[in-house]
Length: 404
Image (cartoon, rainbow, N blue to C red):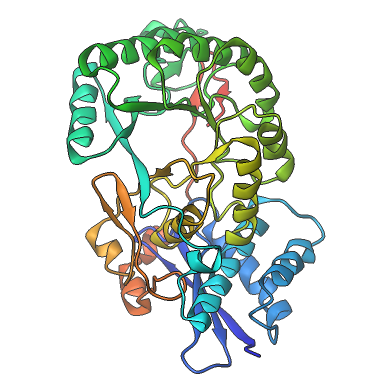
């Protein structure tokens, strides 16, 4: 019986927003790694892992489900982003160990491959329609079949300059204001332009990032129906998901939702009532491989697909964990792309390879990815890592915050 002897945390990236777990065992040279990254609360996650470590010392590494449940209830309150991330990092590391002991990749332990590679979608953007069109063409020529389209930043097309916003005379300092009506005008016009220039060959998506009031969100979904999106992402905030029932009644625009979900009560109704088409929980925020493979199985029974959330703040270890779930899942739909810098890839022997719109894994035992601790330490900038990071704030003309 292999036992846990310790858990180490490794903080890296230049700004210190990546955090990795290394679960040590009593078998010489046998360890597992997992992702516990959180761009905004990295130090909090690190402390939480140190807090839970004494609970796990001496545990049998093979009891992955039992350890998951133990961490889940260890602090009494549960289903929050911190505990989920702690669970996920340790859970990935335990699956990594199990695969190494079995001499098999994790996806083989999950039932084996259901596909040869993992399709990914690209992130195209531009400050003008011409720039966006050129970026979509670039990704299409690289081999991507699914391409996300954004006019500038999140909320792009909906921002008014301060001079045009007609805000109150005592408005708070802000250079721009988000306006629902401007967004409802410009985003459908964006897709009209792209379809006119590119046709229906490329499969297109768009991320609303929850900026709209719920009734306007329903209207946007209806307005975009003629452009046959692959999906419309984060149309509503987690607090307003009941509006998806009305969206379903009004149009057939496919819906993708979930990158902010941390509680089963958020995604269970959407899946079981077939109110969304893609679930987008991040593997590390959904509790790791153990819980997310359960979500994937639930999706299979209700005709919903997975599109695990990655994004620019994610890391190669979480990406690899998602790939293993994708490979073994019949409910797989698409995977979000990541582009990492060469010096970041250099930390991770065995990292996934992104080429021509597909993510390619390796056949090494476990997750198939490792971390070079010395290079990880060298990459970290202590001054930047000491800073706190916050989600950017968009506001309406009167100063009210728009949900990110």
